[in-house]
Image 1 (cartoon, rainbow, N blue to C red):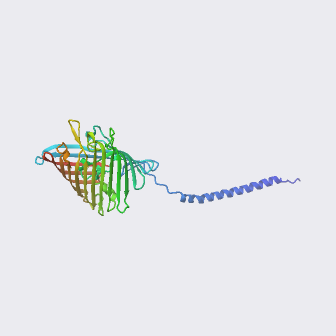
Image 2: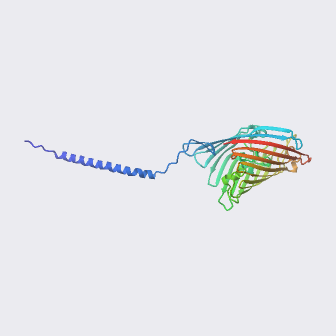
Image 3: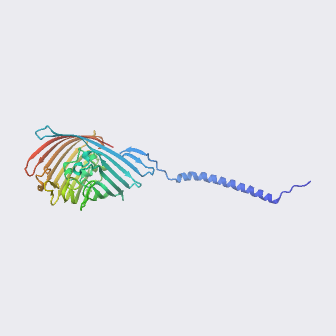
Length: 424
């Protein structure tokens, strides 16, 4: 019988195959164990993901549309202010001389964060006739703000474009944050309003004497200028906060809506020089017949504590030769001084009575000209806040006293005004 013989090469191949299988199985087991152990470690080491923002939000910033990058956003806000007002014939004759029903303000505001949280774009449009400077500019001046800002450091903000100059306090405050339906007659006479240029805002709330400094270099011709002049405007404002910062930015809205638990005070001063201005008020007013340089000095103070608020502003404007003429008509720079003060108390119910006194005194060089009467105004108002300054109702009783410095003629009028404001 023939005995079978196994070839030595086959034995070696089988042996190698067996060992390869064993090694592969062990490697697979090790890989599986390593993966099982590494998975919880990776889960622990992976940084926590930021919760995704909703595409659309609604809150204090208005309607906010968020981009997928988690940074870029667009906030949309609007406000509507409706006014009803009547004025008497005189102090003695209370019959109605003028009656007004008007959409005083209808504004749309867009604020966007672009790619970087420090980079923002601000746009504000106005759509009512009374809010477009139509009589002075002779065209529908829709664009109010259009600027780009960059937060260079936590304390330094840089801005370029069209926006508010750092002028008097009532102008720095938004018109939506007022205790009365409109700003004072002092603001109307001497404010520097908006312009096109560049701004720098520097604040130091942690200094021994906290302060805010603002400066601007601008064209000097106001919103959406049609032609250029040879001069520029230079504006600065310094605010001192001896008792520290106001709660929630309370120094930039009227009335103590935050009911400051401790006394808060802001004292500020500023100056604006408009070189070879082409309008009667620098950035505002009708065109002059010849350029005039003017300088406006501003000072104000604000105090708030436990619902009580008190504010005051002083303004003075000067120009070497304020008169211009085309031979038949005279237009002038309104040179003179102004003083306004107002006080209020906010009850916990949301009602706030307020009292305002204002006086504008033109210089003798323009005395007797149309629109250059000394004007004194006293106003008593009440505001019912429904959603802070965003939704409110206001009513005012006002008395105006006019005196012509040349003829000494005097006239007075009474006025009633009611305002309803709704916005987001």
